Length: 411
Ligand SMILES: *Cc1c(COP(=O)(O)O)cnc(C)c1O
Image 1 (cartoon, rainbow, N blue to C red):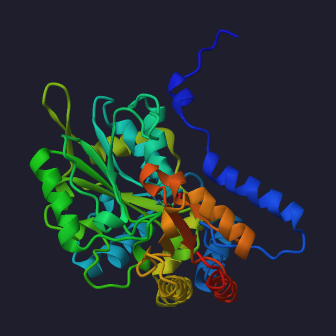
Image 2 (image 1 turned 60 degrees about the vertical axis):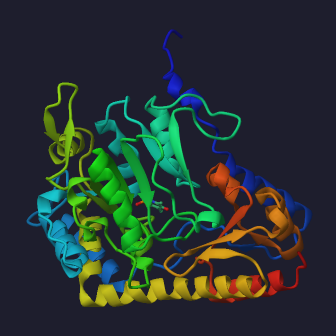
Image 3 (image 1 turned 135 degrees about the vertical axis):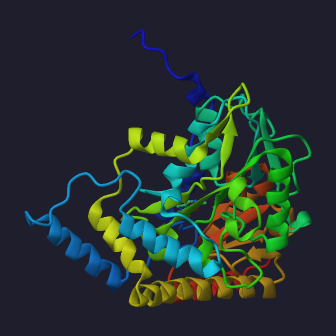
């Protein structure tokens, strides 16, 4: 074999986190087959798709089976009916005016946040929050924008913005020049949010430093508080400095159906080495039309149905169910004297481990003593050490039982 590997891939750390969680769980269950373990590490929705969505989905499948309504390849960046529903349903109510050509429908925000970096030169300096949704980091490693991971768990060449209880999970502006900043709010894994003023600081920074913000709003639908922006475009001037990623996955239960979109405003410009400006909207369009052939027609009709009155009501009921679990977790753990964040505008609760216990030690304690599985914070980045993520996606009954079990532990 003379084929040479892309050595950037060799810099990646194996996906140790969820594999190790699964290993330890399997070992425990083999040794204790009688124990009923409650999964609180679930990063996936559990409620079925809303009825309005299923009806639209099925009707569209039927259309595909009739010669006169059959559809083949659709537009790469989504059917107009969906892009119009998105502009009207998600942005007009916020006072954000977007053109449908600024919306690119896709099969996932994971793919979009992972693929977008292709548009940028390798010489750009990238900043990520720490802890972080690892897709942002790993895709930049694959692209060759970093060196190897150092002993401190950080990749050489990346700028990390720590988010810990000390700064109330609000990242500070980069202290060294950066070109691209990934932000995810409401945050996975910490469940924290940025207020309008806090987000405006980043937009102002980007405007002053000619930087770009990649804003992942996958959990936007979980926002319950008034001073939290649903879209970065609610901040003045953001259209010149930000791309926003949205997904129907957590919003409407599309993790298995696959539909998302990103907003690339026409006002966004990048420069070549000679200083000439290029439209990011045009470049992303070129990328998508070359490498992507669109989301299936029935899935786009299913997504469109979210924006009907019935669809909105049904998805809100599901979100409210998860939020009720989140509130229960947050309040129960706070009552036990633990330091927690998240769970108000997010399905994630980020717990500071008692007595600065390492994340994995707390994982073992919860598993062995309370038969609860969560996710060690250290798996999301070095600043996640000493934290633990619980999720609100289990049933209310199981969540309640889990909280009762935890209340019997002594830390
Ligand atoms: C779940 C999630 C997404 C959504 O990914 P899809 O590919 O649309 O399912 C995006 N970003 C974050 C941070 C997530 O947790």
